[in-house]
Structure formats: C-alpha cells, structure tokens
Image (cartoon, rainbow, N blue to C red):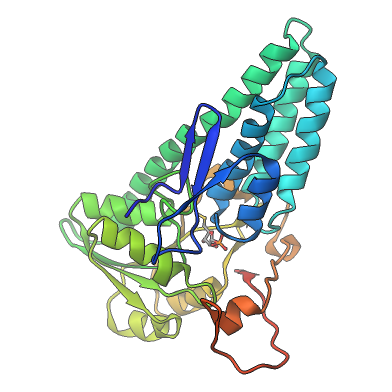
Length: 325
Ligand SMILES: CSC[C@H]1O[C@H](OP(=O)(O)O)[C@H](O)[C@@H]1O
C-alpha cells in the first residue's frame, strides 16, 4: 500500500492511477502536458490540490526537455499550456489559481532584462517544483488548526467522533490531506474516537480511497452509506463534520463533492459543527457567490457502472457530479 499519489524527481513524474485503487497500486508515467491533462480529466488523479500540482508538474516535465533561445517563445508556450490544463476539469479552482500565478511569474521574468532564457526556464520549473512541499506544509497547518477548532467544542481529554465525505487525504493532495489531515492530527493527538466516512457515490472516493488511507494509517474509522448520514448525526453523537472543497467563492459558498450540501443541511438540523478544510489556493476571490461556480457534469457511466459492470437499468439518466453548498 502506498499513499504517495505523486512521484516527482529531477524532471521525472509518475502518478498513482487512483481508478485502480484499492485493488491495484500502479503508477503512470507523465511525459508532458497531454498526459497530465488526460489523467486529470479521467480522474486517475483527482482532488483539487493534486489536480493543480500534477497539471503544473506535467508542464515542468515538458519544459525541462526543451531549449528556448527566445524568452517570448517560452512565455507563449507556458501560457498556452497552462490554459489548456485548466480545461481538464472545471470546478476545482486550484489549477486556475496556479496557472494565474505562474503566468504572472513568467511574465515578470520575461520583462526582467537581467534574466536569460535559460535562467527563466530554470526558475519557472523550480517555482512549480516548490508547489509540492508548499502543499504538504499547508496541509499540516490546516490539520493542526482544524483539530484545535474541533477540540475547542469539547471538554478536555474527550475523544471525538468525526464525519467526512469523499477523499481529501494524501490521494487528493501532495500528501497528508486537508479534511483528512484534520482527522490525522486528531488521531496523532489521541483525541479521535472514530472517523465515519461516506462511500461517496457515484465514484466511491470514500469507499475506494479514504478507506484505503485510513486502513493504511491504522486510524479508527467506519465506512457508511451516503444515505446513513442523517441517522448517524441523530444517533452517533458526531462532534463535527469536516469536508474538503473544490472551490470556495468570495462569500464563503463552497463547491464540493455531490452529497456535501445535504450533509451540511442535516448537520445544521442536528446542530453539528460543520467545517470546510481547504488551502488558500481553493478560494476563488473572482467569484462572488456559489451561483457563479461552474458545476461539473460527468459521463453517466460513472454512475450506472462500477468496474464496467452495469448496476443501473439502461435509460435516460442524468445527474450533476458536483454541486454548490
Ligand atoms: C482536497 S480536494 C477535495 C475535493 O476533491 C474531490 O473531488 P474529486 O474526487 O472529484 O476530484 C472532492 O470534491 C473533495 O472534497
């Protein structure tokens, strides 16, 4: 078992094919931007932060193999490929945030006459490589801060029962995770009684990925059907719900995996504190409210089949994949 979703060293990139988990642990080589776009679009790599990191690293791999005589040629190629990578999936904002930041950075290098084309290329690749460690550092901070927030609501020494949705761990980020990072910190502090997590239909990120991570880390946990959450909050004294985010609007509206909204409504009804754990790169200050967040629509086969076996009768089925809370 491995929780390293992304393997990058000296211009070589491999990603864990998450569609094969938990049955098979297989890495896919990423030779450039086209490979990066495909593994993101097919959800072999998924999770808002991981999407941005893999997308940008796929560009770093491609750029590292080329030689640029002219700085403008490098800038033009970078801008075009970053905008292409954004199109792989529409809702998670992290890839767009990273693209905007990197385009601004390479423009500053292009405008700096003291920087050669070779230096510009090296600095640009280094800026992307730094995203890996930054994400891990952010996740550990989110985990510690989130654990403190949860524990503020309980008596000293009390162990807590957490509910989470989808996968927000090492398989959705560079490592450690966001909402699952909070669970990891609570467990490390010996303050976690149990982590309940949903299967997360239709793509089963919870049953396939979160279960995989929690078993790997030997964290006390219980997989529950998505339809159990209301009964769970009524009967299991859940201390807090902690989820991730794909995109947070300027007013705090949050787009996350489908099912999050109903969990939030039930948490409100049962007065269970509800937390969104996300890095700054998941916040889109250019979007005022959740009404302006693009809802991702995925092929219906992702709901009607599991491992290529049909589980729903043929017919005209249509559903949203992500929805606003
Ligand atoms: C830490 S990323 C969180 C976010 O990503 C998941 O979506 P997907 O598996 O479709 O990429 C889910 O919405 C998580 O909350």
